[in-house]
Image (cartoon, rainbow, N blue to C red; front, side, top):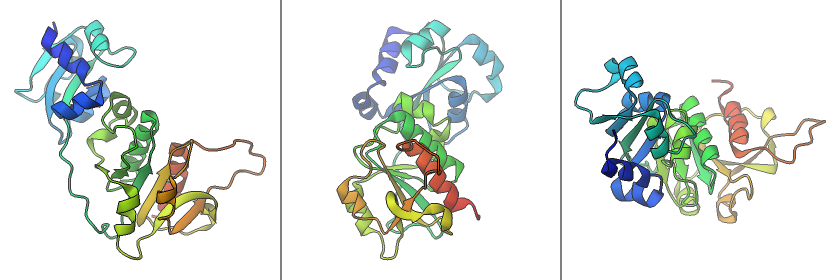
Length: 252
């Protein structure tokens, strides 16, 4: 049975102010919890069903504080519609140094006011897929450690570094010659370019695109051409990023 104090603490982590206050966040669902346990992140407490505990006994670190809970308790305490396996409280990772110069041959993803946690989680998953060094978030982005974002990363939360920066100040401070890419309807046709995965790819919100101050920092503008018979007005920001990233890495 989950104690009242623990239940109250877990539910408080639904809100960003308490995640920041306690330096902790929630990881929900068996797959995500197993990703957490196999990562370098610190697990503070694990709540799991008896069945999940029996199935994954060898993957549970010795000495880890854990509580056996019912499926009903896990669902009530978390944010998922149903949770039949596990829920963990993890410690927020300390932010690692964001170097003033980009690693040689590295492409960073920078997100400008991407406010939807599902989109943000998918973008972090893309960064994980392509092996990017990390993702830089503007202050207006969704929280990288909200339950919805963590769930959407499908485990990438445990591997992808995240930094928060004022992009309008950070981008101009990069060394001269750093390519800063962004999507633009008037940009170069991305399918006709031979791109190398170096520099920064900046993506804005689906509703508003890049903020003017960030857009002014771009050194190269890329366009994803619509098919001849295509009728969609726009692409989701995560889909756009996936197409652009694939063009950066297609010759690797």
